[in-house]
Image (cartoon, rainbow, N blue to C red; front, side, top):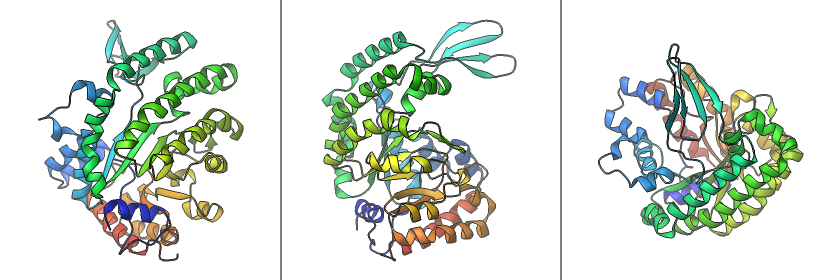
Length: 394
């Protein structure tokens, strides 16, 4: 089987030849890689993970702003070195979500800067404290200006020629099955929250619903126009939508609000993605989102990552209630730092789901800096053993 075929079989409740896919949920945490280097990881491999190994041939700045595809090449090299199956991680950045960083105001006590998301932050010189000063969207006029900027960026950067130049370089390897493509996009809860801030965003569901709908309508239009063109070049094997709409105590919005402001847009987007060859549509949200799982399913979502164990997301229990739901992640990352016995116990806990299929185990978020390289290598070796059981109960 090719890597693409193995991943598809693993997530499709089939029994792959020899074993299921051995993959990690997310790209590595910078602090964790720095620790690994001190414990024996070659610096060259670390540079790949950091994206530093590509600096000899920097991409055109026009492309790096929204389509920094070379970053995923470095992650793939790092993960292959660590023993994972090749996964080519790519992203699609909305045209109003990247700003030039600049200083807005400076005094003897503080500096106010615009960060790359458009938010103003206040940095105090005496104690290195940083606080949010002003979000990119505080009113409808802010959004209209930002939307106009986004339309200009679309015309300037998101041309057919640039899309082909960036993503076309991955076509041959993807078609041969050398690697699967995992693409992340920003979702319909995530994006307004990032633009407005958490509390103003939640109030806006009631006070400014037209504004939220206008933002999400614009996002949908961009995806149905530009993202679809990328899928014609490299149809994602896994496309995951970043949302982060839940915390340890549950979702930040009701099922009714989800259906109106998030699910309704999924229903328009996901069928088109599937028609373009996207195999599995996942949602990335931390926290406890069990209450919203029926709404996600009804909106067309196939599965979830990373399945935050420490927020109560037990994949064994969730699978019993939703037998067709797919998972990536779900392995308690803190167990890896605790050592071999804890790692073994955690694999015993999730083994029933591995045997059922439709599941690629991985950490329930990025591997923590408290993890030693020795323990992480042991985790990977046990992951390979566990995936020999993938789909065996089918």
